[in-house]
Image: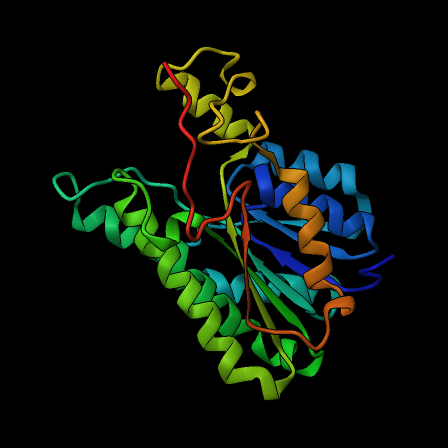
Length: 258
C-alpha cells in the first residue's frame, strides 16, 4: 500500500486519466475525492471504489469551486495530503478563430482553478508535508496550430508548477508536473471518430505520432502518478516529466513513406 491512508483530491476524475489516477490511488490505499461534472460516471466510479471515495460535482470555472473542493475533502476524510490537478479544457483555437470568451474559460479551468485549489488546500498540504501533481501536456512547449488557448494554458501551468516548487520547498510541500503526450482515453477515441477518422483508428496510429504503434494508455500515467504522490519520491520537488513515446527535445521524427 504505497499511499496508505493518504487523502487525495483528483480533479476531472470521472473519466480518462483522472479516473485512472483515482482508481490506482484507492488500490494503493488512499482515500480520494472524485471530482467532475458527469454525475452518472462519477456515481458509478464511487460505487466501484466504495468507502474510500466520495464524489463532488462542481464547475472549476467558478472561482469559489476550489474552496468547496477542499471543504468537501476535509468533511469526508478529515485531512488532505495531495492534490492532483488533472481537469482541463482541451479547446480548439488558432489566431484567426480565437475569442476572448474561449480564452478566458480555458485559462480559468486549466490555470486559475489549479492555482487557487492549491491555495485553498495549502494549510493542509503544509501541515501534512503533502504533494501536488499537475497534469500538463507536451503542447505546453508550443502546441499544435489549432491548440492556441490550450497550449498557452499548459505552458502557464508548467511555470506555475516550477514557481511553487521553488517557493515552497522549505514548507516541505512537493510539486511535480507531467507533460503528457497523446493518450488513448474514451473521450479521445470518440473525438477523433467524430472528426472523421475510422472507428479502428487507434489500431493504426502512424509511427510519427506513436513509435510503438499504439497511443499511451491512461493506466501508464496513473502508475507514474503513484510514485510522485507517495513518500517514495521524497524529498524531490520541482520535477517536470515528459510522459511521451519519444524525446521531446531535439526530436528528429522519421516520417513514413507514402
